[in-house]
Image 1 (cartoon, one colour):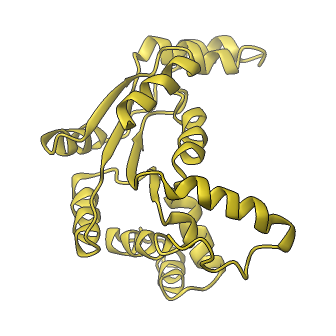
Image 2: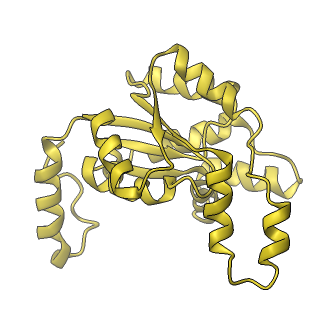
Image 3: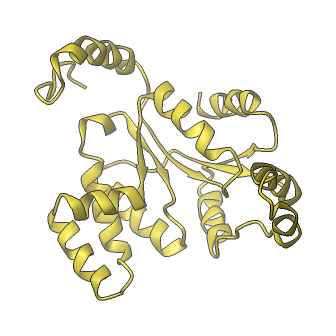
Length: 213
């Protein structure tokens, strides 16, 4: 990565910080990661730590879709028309938006994909697109956590709500249909790392670093 590439969009006060960041990042290996895990699994805690440590960009497909629609990119315009018809945005379109996002300077060292792929079909389309660029997914971090621990964690967040009790009894951890199939798909490629997500955040961070080193 060139230390001076596209600095014109960086405010002058931040240029020094940005150059230092790029200098630090230049020695980091490229990484393309997928994070999988339900709300409460600690995925959201680890994601920014991984992003900073390895100089990656964080690609959350929902945010990216909204941004593409807001900035009226060619794909964003198609997405907007699709959503206005009440239809689901196609996998090809989402992969196209990821493809666009990957070209940003912040994604030069790689990315963290969050919330995508959710199906094997999406995983295949993503692989196809990455293959064209001569890259691939390096690791899938599976924030595996027992349902009962997840229940405690999430209900813990709601403990002060007056309806806390009923929430607790009715609670069912969110299951994303098809997500196990995606994990199997990447398991066959030998890139899945199962993390002990029930451990305290600092210990999970250490495990993540072991897996990615």
